[in-house]
Image 1 (tube, rainbow, N blue to C red):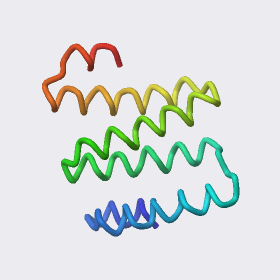
Image 2: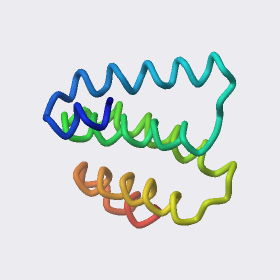
Image 3: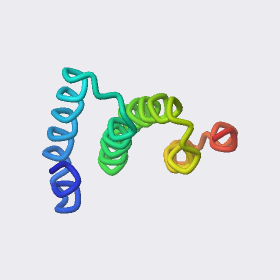
Image 4: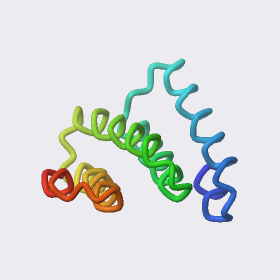
Length: 98
């Protein structure tokens, strides 16, 4: 639902659904790669809203969760997102690290 709402431009509703998904995952103990994907999606939505602090927070959570699964392809997506955010913030050295 969150991804659908984001594609329709309903970013606040998208975040609401994403946070609900995280709440359910935490209650059920689901710490799978899907949880990382949800964090990533919320980060992307905050990025679209230009809320850089929250975007970074959720992308860092996505990276921490994905790191447990050693999924290089997925980590590349998340780190690319963090690098783009750093570039937007004119933090070029930090972007190079990502």
